[in-house]
Amino acid sequence: MNKRIFVSLGILSVMFFGLSAQDIIVTRDSKKIEAKVTEVNRDDVKYKVFTNQEGPTYTLPKSDIASIVYQNGQVDTFETPASAPSTPAQTAAAAPRSAGVAPTPEIRGPHRKNFYAGVYVNPLSIAVLNGASLGAELTFARKFIVEPYLRFPTTSLYFVLEEDAESGLGFGMSAKFFTGGRYGGFYVGPNVECNLLDFEDVFLFLGVNLGYKFQFSSGFYMRAGASLGTQIEIDYETLPWGNLEFCFGFAF
Image (tube, rainbow, N blue to C red; front, side):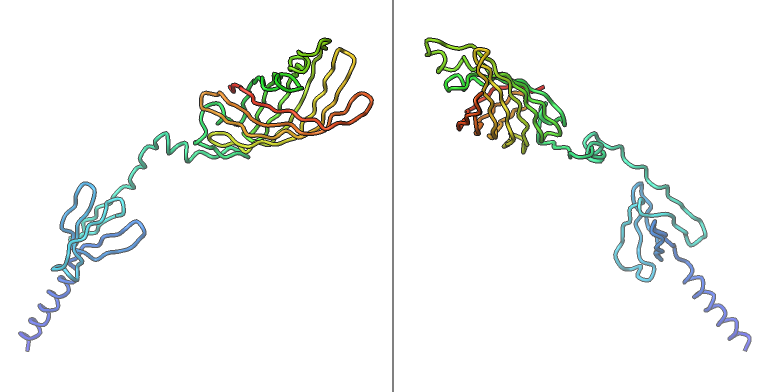
């Protein structure tokens, strides 16, 4: 009788110690894996599932493991891996975007800035009635252009061919919405211009300026478009009025 009791106790002890002779892998999300750890390497841990030790070997990165409790009670803990230093490109991508306008990496040169200025000359008007112009562009948020300019009406062929060529000077202002892209974009907006001829005759132009602007990474740009509207003379007589433009400019 006593012999049978001792044998039974021995079998139970073997079963108990056999079942408890396992390693516990604790992952960083608090999951526990009953395993038999076979290798602990620099970057990973290899193990077999405790209930299937004849099965495949699994690999788990150390970065996913919080600790390992071995069958003998020893505990290995693993530090949280330090974050790799960010590259300049990652830093730029993660940087908060400025309010109102998102960065546009495709645009290069001065045109990529939220604000830039430029100067231009429009020689095409020499061949038509209005005369050449010289102006500046102030671009805000890469989308809105304010453009003051000077007009030289007596430089046009019309006045040059006249025997009694008049002297004159004009001033204009245009505000435009600009679609803006890598190679340029369309623009449209109101245009007001006042011309003083021979210091006597005053002409006021009210219209719309529209066209396309080509821009390059060097800062150089070209603009092709037209102004269409109404000319108001000093005696309030109104006439249809228009002007073509082909400008060359430089932004900075």
